[in-house]
Image (cartoon, helix red, strand yellow):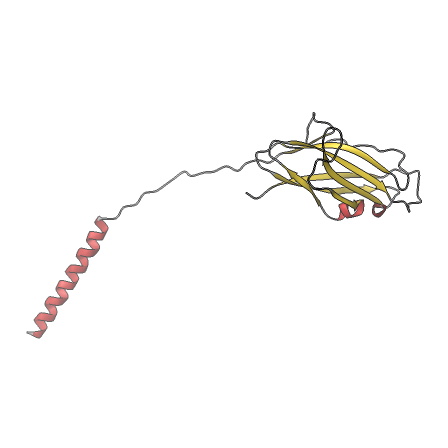
Length: 179
């Protein structure tokens, strides 16, 4: 008799668990979201000698007859032709000439149309050798905005070499500001 009760309880348990599993299968469903995609934005930093003719590459400036202790200035424009704000960095490349890069300072800063400082970061003075060794943060540049910058080159007063020409390129990088 005890065996029959145990057998009956076992059968009830098996039938009950089958009913739960079967019912669960009848009450579940799956939906699938397919063909998902996204696109990334593009960044576009451009340079110009004035507020027109922006391009990826621009011929720079020539300062003549600078003597030790003197500063020469040149202007250029950078435009953020993107929809995101940039942090700008600059780095000197291809430095060559008669005056050592450690004897020449370079400052870069934002100015208005008259060449007057308008606020923001004044980068430097750093020597050309320092600019060459690592990028320097210049400023932030808002999306869709062009900004005029002033580059000031100062020959250290201890320089005794004259009559030569020094050359360098400058590379600018716009990196998206984290949202």
